[in-house]
Image 1 (cartoon, rainbow, N blue to C red):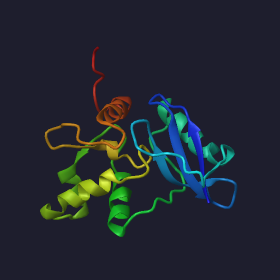
Image 2 (spheres, one colour):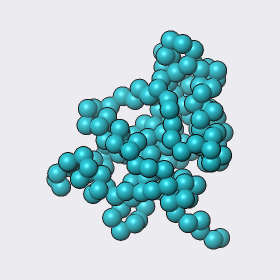
Image 3 (cartoon, rainbow, N blue to C red):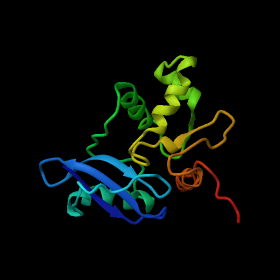
Length: 166
């Protein structure tokens, strides 16, 4: 059975989804941010306590006290998607990489770039597996499931982008 909780963040309310890990915690299967199309299923059960460690690590990240996450993850995807999602974890905090650089690292041929982009776009663990750190070769912000504004906010938080004056 899927468990879920909601938690506040500087980006708005986050939806966390996972399955019981057998010790009172969860294996995280999804993290959804405002701007995404994800809703709570009637079959899911809310369990705030099971997500205590996930919420603590997210709060530390947003407070600038944590740069990566140490959580049990269990996202569902194809073997190729899993390989791409694991590679996202290797992009250091405060940096960006391009789709082309990531493709080269994963030895994805040029004709596979569209599939690479689709796998990144299907990442169910936004923020945890930092797909927001992948940008266009020209430095442009490309699609992000929660919206380009959220991507820019995360990169600014991490120091990879300079804050925009308003």
